[in-house]
Amino acid sequence: MKKIFVLVAASFFAVSVFAQFEQGKHRIGGSTNLEFSTIKSKGTDYSTNKFFLGVGYGYFAANNLSTDIELDFASIKDSYEDHGDASFDFGFGARYYFPSKIFAGASFSLLSIKYDDEWRLGSGI
Image 1 (cartoon, one colour):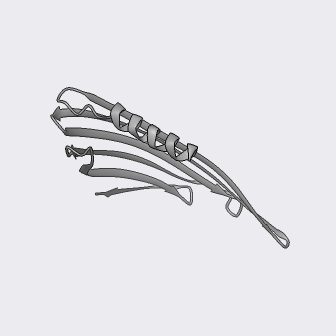
Image 2 (cartoon, one colour):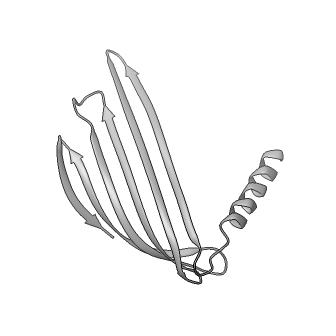
Image 3 (cartoon, helix red, strand yellow):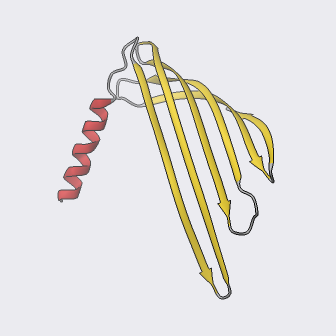
């Protein structure tokens, strides 16, 4: 019961912190993830290292409407390959926040992927 109360209280705090959607406000966010995993079976060991870093910025051009810029970097290395794979992503978009604090948005990303020691470009919506 204690855990549920803490979870509910934390979610109300998070909503109240990000509940300012007026024109001229700024939104800054980020995330990171670091993962190490190892699988051992008869005669083989397999390990994977993953790293992710993302940052984002938004500016409210109008009430409830933000324009966004995002930068992401990801890296994956496993024990079966001599090289690692990586990606760099630059994106921009917009979000509209409804009165219930739920948002809908669209974005466009330019993606550069390093695969087999070669960088390749791509894009997505």
